Length: 424
View 1 (cartoon, helix red, strand yellow):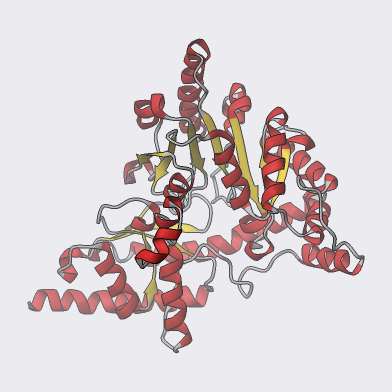
View 2 (view 1 turned 90 degrees about the vertical axis):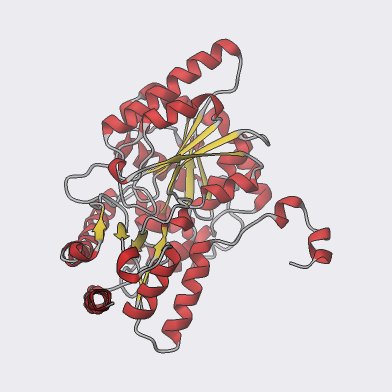
């Protein structure tokens, strides 16, 4: 950016970065458009040709438009939608904020941003796992202090209670995501309870000292997508006392594969809701009335929802099982993965530094793209800066056939690269 432009902008705007994920995805789209054989395991989006939204939802949207529901909705969301979401969350997760505690936004991002604005002052600590989606950008947007809690393959890349405990005195907001983007792993009941216990013990100390408490922002937009034998757990289910300190984020973007329909929501203890409603209203960040009306009808019909969720889980598993089988057969080449537990992601390690004679994840990413037509996102895009060979694979925009073809190309490319290494 030239000096004359930066001189006119705020410091926040001058320091704002573009998403690395979107930059990679844009280059991949260009390659596909030019006719190259590339499988896009990149953006956490859903291709409508592979994962369609429920027909009951789209039909109800059309019905609402034709019925003249085209004016502004209330800033907090349609009452019938807030009622339906409140009831659904209470039954499914044991989180009962009532309709007054549900605030609707145009996707999960506005209510996520509102969560941070509600609690963070400049200089406050925002703690988040690493790797994780976009939290470091929100640190910048809020003028917060970055507190990354780094996961490891042994912790399934999830932050642990012990690591959070080591920084708890500095934390004002702790954001957790389960199932986790980018890793596709989920907190167990014990892991989550241990974290909640750390937060509650700190907040008891802060009551005495008068400091503001630690607030837990729990992002569960992938909560309805779990692998066989894995249960999604909410903090209130393992630690009821944390209710007053917990903000829950959810959306149809992932659970109903409707990323472009832009409907998310926040569940918050009702006494704290009014400022959020005001902020969402000032932003104008509410979903279109027809989408809200249609979602209200669908979330009132739990049988239809569960049928959709079960079918979606099956289609995700169809893709994950192929990836696990094929990547598992490539372990001798330095390929590894963490068992997927939820969401649409697979943490995959391409430890190809020796085979390729390279030093960085970016070199491996480029080789995978150019030699195997496999487009993936390095964990650096999620805040894990070390060159460890770990990448995110997303299955939201690919078919079973796409995956098979990609694994065939990868297997061939690895065999050729290994032969060249032995010849060298």
